[in-house]
Length: 249
Image (cartoon, rainbow, N blue to C red; front, side):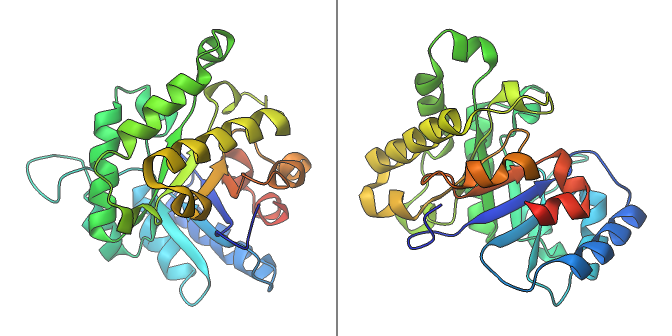
């Protein structure tokens, strides 16, 4: 982490877990054990039906609530979809975009880019995910794959808005598998991501961008991962479902 130049952001990704009732119980417990000091920004990205309960319970706290996806269109005949401006009006601050599980459902880099632009235009902070599969890592194309995802995902994002984008590196082979990239592996890719942003936007902007690591981060390995200079936070999966573990991170 380098708090001199950029924010540290710890965000939880609940995926398809917890009902609104369970969300209220979690948030109530979480805010009672959350440390008073503020060394990082904290966000919890929850299923759409849980957003109202999360926002109500965490009102008057410093915890930001986020969504796990949004549609690229502001309105229209898109049954079952949710627009970025709807999320903002519901009380969201963040939205996760391009998660590997969404990409596995058919989401393309062009889709991610359209959603990033829509989120920024609505006033949300997008957490844009990128990452390689085990096969891609073993084939030695990690950097090429990440470069493509970053360049396509950020296409058309102007300099005055890029600072609001958070990039999350989530090696697909380490999500929900119990496997975790070593601190060195994670740091190497996060440094490469910052280098890619520098080539696109210049050194000053690259220095200010928050880059998270996502992929089985937990209390046991969080300190080592967050000690890396180019890892500015975490996108937490399983451990974010347990208040005490999330607080420990």
